[in-house]
Length: 326
Length: 208
Image (cartoon, helix red, strand yellow):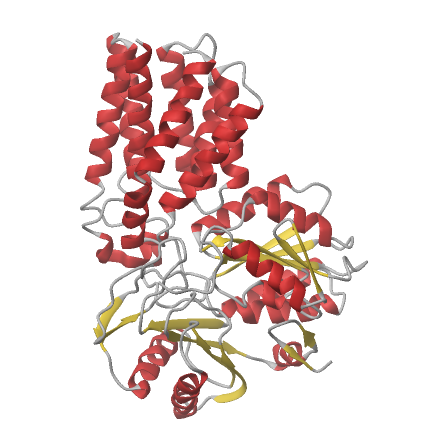
């Protein structure tokens, strides 16, 4: 294993120090990443968090128009309640705090515990569960939160920036989750610094369909095929669950180890598929946003926009990983 | 059981988890996200530190410190889940700490984790090791079995329970996303639960 780390134990800490050094707009304290300007009176605080290894999610989305704080856990391990409590109390500007939680057992439990421990702050919580690869949800922990987390954070963050009340910010976050679906495909596994070897064996000739974002194996394994066919597999799965029509926001997201060029190859196929179903892709995003360390592969996330959601998506944002309009 | 025996339980559990860290992580990599051994090892190191910093006066206090530390400092699912077992045990444990009192508290701890994780027997989780262990303790109390023998039986029941998760299909946690593909692997949480019970049997044997 070759990785740009000092030690496996210090990698999260070292990366956070680097983020703080690179972005004066951020402040890092006790494993929480904050907007440097501190809590804004009358504005709902928006807090998210989860295991590290998905960068830029979540800390890269801290800033104007998106998150007020992010709580990074160890690699692929949810943050602890202490971090979440600290973040929640620190960003409250009197209007309450929204927790955006990806639907994984660990994240859900730790955010629940934190919400119980928080004092004198009104907390609302929204679960993101957009992954259509999880089918049989009666017999699972429910759908996973993946790429659409970015949509939820962006749009809820934009509404919070307009000083909307907590109930409205939470409602729009839920609405985005309900209108979004994702599907991921891995070409390789990923290697955590602590394990030092790939999480699962994936032969060079195969791809893994329906992966999550933690290097966990997916729903099925099939032989490698051209990008067009992989894109169609992902889009068919999404379309079967949420018929594609009207205006769409589409993200082709890299898992961390895939060249941008290949993501654009996939994007062309994804957009053609959506057009073929009679939908309009009115907003798009291509790049590495919700990653799985060094995994090669991609995920597609789709959100059915309306006028209001389009406006909130377009609203100014200024974070290390997402910035426009300001 | 006194406080020092209870501390010894966590010391021994920490030793076993550290020894089996890679095995637990490997089990987790097969059907989860491959961090169980590392996380629990880190968590129990924190527990040992917390217990050393403020030596507790009673077994209930040991359990409460261990549970709170695991909840607050480990993260993942295993932190809150194990944490709530021990915290609830600490809350429920009556003194003097007889086998019957311990068994009753243990049962409450298992109920707490079932509730928090919304898991039942057969879902391929730590409950599949803990619930049989709890039942074995209760039966031992009913039959008037000695402490050493009782925890031996509980440890055996937990180990068998962990083995029994191999053919199960996971319904909770990250392994549930695999559906049928989770079959054929031991649940890492059940495996670590069996280690906790093995640790208890070891300290009971050594104390006798």
